[in-house]
Image (cartoon, rainbow, N blue to C red):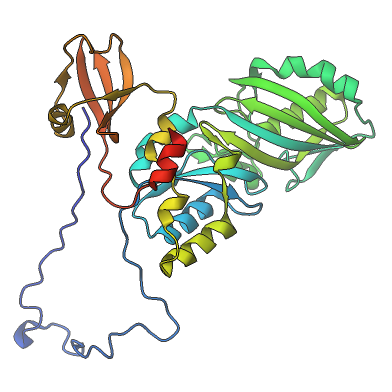
Length: 363
């Protein structure tokens, strides 16, 4: 049973630190002049962190890392905690779901969901990174026809074995594969099962480029798809454009460009808008999980980490994970087992949350 509590940092007391006889650094002096304690000219005062809870689905621009994107969103909201639900390469654009505050407890549910991509493969060159940023390692004058590509795609649909790219975040004896590859070491990665739900040829703008759309499960590398298709066709290939259009429950309509988010933050600072309008509710990530409403008395028990016995004719006849609400508000993730509701993650949604309009959109 997991119950979340606030962490309190305790600062050690420094008794009598200003007494002359205790001062072991006589050259130091205590500055009590408030004018001299002001921030230096040209520097920004540090913002106070606050409680913010919800999802921001950033339409990540090309060239930005996922880590940097999280840092930017965290700063814009002055949030205490933030994290993303699935890395998106700097080369790629599109949906990067960023969990803020208590939404970070629901990240695994998004990461386990399906992803959809639209990507362009450039034929004639294979690169060591399997995208445009890498070094050319193989070339070919062959160019595939649409018929040849379409005939091959069934081999890459369903449950398949895929070898991840050398430049990936997979760990080998504690080291990231991309760090080893950059150091010139030979990287041997074993094939692993991934699931491709759908893979189609969307466009063939010219003989050297093909545009695909793919919907796949967790752990799939789209770059590896381009590499492997190119090898079988004998023309070699690499990703030259990549956009993520779906992550779990989050679709393109949920995405907000960085410029639009920054503009909203500026308007919010002047009182003309609310940052809550950019947030999706925490429970948006739990769309595939049954919801269970409880009474306030049962909610109080669950909030203390205590199990609740499910009784009466309205008691659910099921088992497994549910998300629990009280008076329409998210309370906890819990397990139903042998007629008991056992809390696993309790949510504390005090602070800034999604606006009522966004709550209605997600319902």
